[in-house]
Image (cartoon, rainbow, N blue to C red; front, side, top):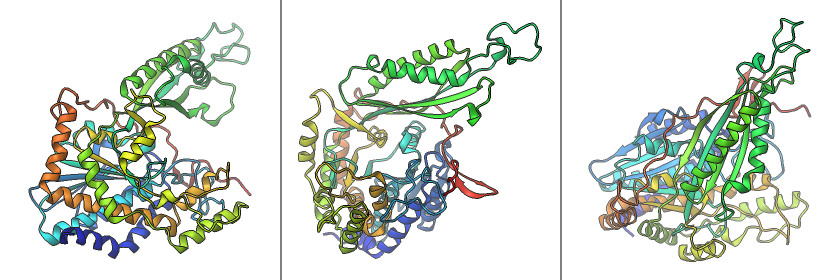
Length: 524
């Protein structure tokens, strides 16, 4: 092993306590999409303390950043942290079901822990930085803060606004969330496309719904037929969309459409027509052409719903992310480094924690409570073969994540490191809180973070110092895109909208009652 690679590994080992503390900090913040204020401030301060120059609010997104460290002319390697949690998943770092202290169970919490994702990636880039400084390696590290991944938010915007231009290679990492993608890299079948938009319904002139009765000067009086209003428009669109789902796209390829109601009636059961209602739709599709088709149907539904309820409607884009692009040279490079590092090792404390969770759920604690896939490696070609068993031959992408944006600007590897996943009795399904808790308990999640940091650190050092390895990845990028950026097979950024930061996204609020989730904890 080269001295530079050893330096990267030694840095991770020497700072393992810091990485553990940092991961816990982000995990306990539990901030959700577009509202990750504490989390982004922590990253900005940490990166500046480590010698990076940091642009805050990059791309017009208050909770995004773009950080740069350079030792001179050389390759430019990109990576990123995500740090958004999921509403309704507030769980303590505990072996029993309970929210974090003082919060409602409806508050944000990390599920497929972006806390571990971000700190694992940060650790890898800081390890590479240490190797660059110690061994005179020339080059640049670009590390991005990517908020709102759960709504595929920031990466399409960063891409469209030029932040990924000039980068030679990207390293993308995620803790395992689906088997067989644990302790491996993606080979051919990368994630697909995703579109999301908020549909807003406005009832601006309820008084003009029908003729007012002659005996009352009051608009929308009790004696008058009321305009249906915005809430009715939202419900109509919701119902139409459910009815027409089978007519939106052929049922092949594993696509999905989900929705979230952001506001309707402003929590007021009045007898006046609601003036505003908003619903978000997010589709996940193998390619962006299918997403275009789904949203043509959604636009028709919105038009019909507005017409029926005396409203006008608007569509505000939240995301348009492209499908991914493989790069075998990058995948093989990271895979060899993963083989050298080995998978995470869940020690005695992790096993004891898992057994305690099993006991608290009324199960017989197992001697080996974790799935073997948490620690063992799987060759990416074998993982690809298993995944393809249930996919039609024509489908080239599956599942959804917006790291795919980076794939169209530079050769990109997608790395998956095992996370703590419990074995269960036949036909048993663990409740979500158990896996969420395992992502916040240091004994169980630190092995994921440390393993990821080492693999990322080694891969970054290789890309900075092994010019042939980087050249091979870039040649493959040129071939797959038909000429690189702008080539005949290249997909340009699809994002043509402003950051959707002004909507009523879930968040923590501070009032005379103190800091709490926007849905307060109920008594008892």
